[in-house]
Length: 343
Image (cartoon, rainbow, N blue to C red; front, top):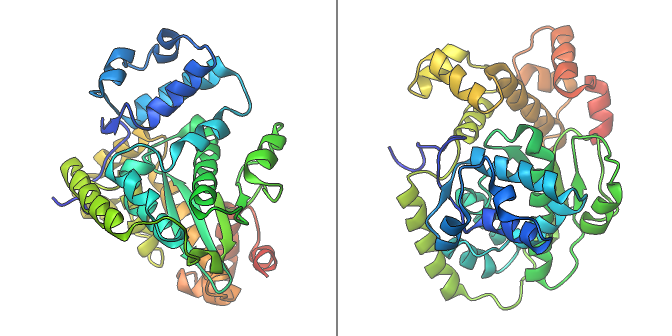
């Protein structure tokens, strides 16, 4: 099985301990947190992290995040972590990212090498006539750690792009969760245009910023680093998670909403096995299918500019009432409200 067919799961130990986890450990140690308390219950040992020999699973990383959040007990922890994450020191993938000639190449680098650069959340890129959108999806079963990881990931991308471009870029950040009590941290680290209670966790920027040249990029260094990063992905045996693969499959087949049975067959496993794997990630099949169909509906409204009737027809709803009920379940909004939102 090639890297484009294989995947990692919540309990796959592939994240180098001296990569992203070390950034969180360093942040905690800088605030006088005891390393033994920080690593308690994670199955990790500080000396192994220092030796560069430890590989974590996403589950272990989430346990580390939970400990750090509790011990640090500070509203800015996720944002300060984010500022340390990208380009990072994660080998050739980080070197390739640091040599990106513009924002578009940087985003493509993060997306393609997400198993190395963003193993807990998957960034995806969409374009319309005016904007580039980067929306973030849980790839590893973050559950109660999702907001922390979202805050860190958006901060990382914003800080990295502004550092490499040499200018303050007009990113806008949208979150699906409600406005938190520590909203001032969003204003400080992500800008005062941060919005809450949205349909997706996304960042957007005017499209012209994608191709503005960035200073100090080396084409030769980038090409060599990309080849070495490709070798590293090949050595891992995968470039994305099971949840990533499932999302792409369900979104590509959103018109027909494939059944659990058909989906399991396409992934080479039984229905029971697929259900068990999804449960391990804190989700279930219907939730994943609803998400994929919701995202397709939003895409058709926002990017394609389709009418209510066209979206319903594309998603194979013959009864408008059924479409309204389904969209209300997916988004909390009626079709007309969604149309107004995107208008």
